[in-house]
Length: 174
Image (cartoon, rainbow, N blue to C red; front, side):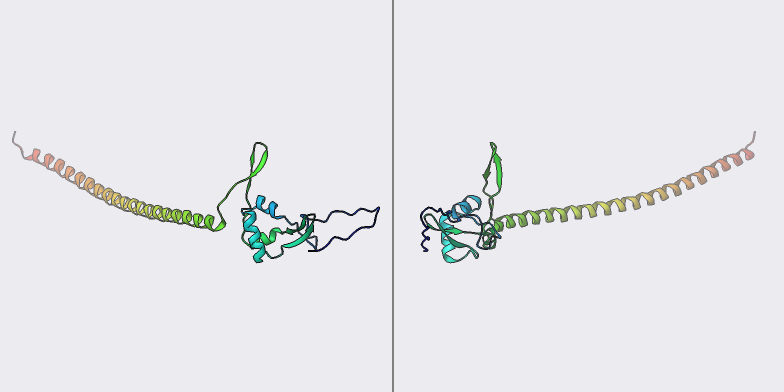
C-alpha cells in the first residue's frame, strides 16, 4: 500500500483516478463493482480470479479507501468473461442473462445439425420426386407412342373393312 503525499498548506490535490483509464491512458478500465454489473460474473468470483492472476492487464490503483482494481475490458475478453446484453425496460437499460459462449455454441451446433439433417432428408425427397417425374414422363411418352401405333392400326383396319364391304357388294346377286 502506498501512502499519499502530503500537500503543503493552502494548496489542494485532486483525488486519485480509480476507474477511468489504465496507466498508459489508452484503454478504459472498470472497477470490480462495474464489472459485476456489466459482465456475467459475481464480485466475489471476480476477486478470486484477480487474486489468482487470471486477468492479465488488471492492476491496483490507489483510492480513497486504500487500493482498488482497474480492470481493462481486454482482460475480461481474454479470460472469456461474457458481457451482459442490455435491453430497454421502461426507458432505462437493464442487463439480461445470456448463455455463456460454450453453451450458446453447443446449442447452435445442435440446431445446425438438426437443420442439416432436415435439409438432407428434403434433398433425398426432392431427388426421389424428380426421379418419379422423369419415369412418369418416359412412361407417358411410351404410352403416347403405343396409342399412336394403335390408332394407326385402327385406321388401317377400318380402311380394310371399308374396302371389303365395297368389294362384297360386287358379288351380290340381285
